[in-house]
Image 1 (cartoon, one colour):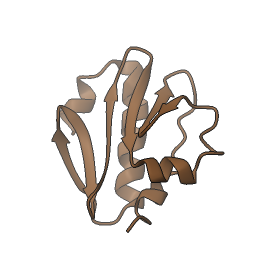
Image 2 (cartoon, rainbow, N blue to C red):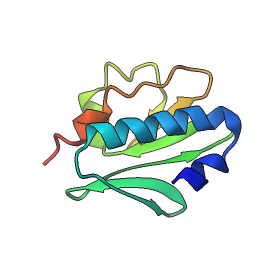
Image 3 (cartoon, rainbow, N blue to C red):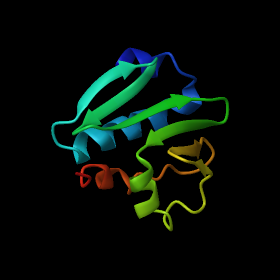
Image 4 (tube, helix red, strand yellow):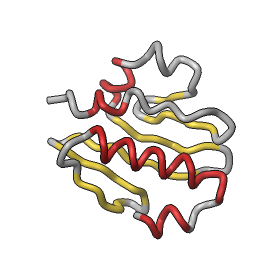
Length: 103
């Protein structure tokens, strides 16, 4: 994972490191791996993954989590289970613990 992050543009690295740190701290016993060329975190059949784009990070997370945090994420563009996190905005991570509450 460190290698993946280090190979990304500098403007993305802070966001990627914060996402990774938050996921590992908030979701006990989450499995971390690279899948489909993306950092991927899995637990109990659910997954979070992300990839970098020119102006944002695509964060893929269960649609149920995005729905639970719809109001908090209202300022971010989203489509189905993808949330777009622009590099020029402070990254929001408050919804990540919601992932671990899914059963």
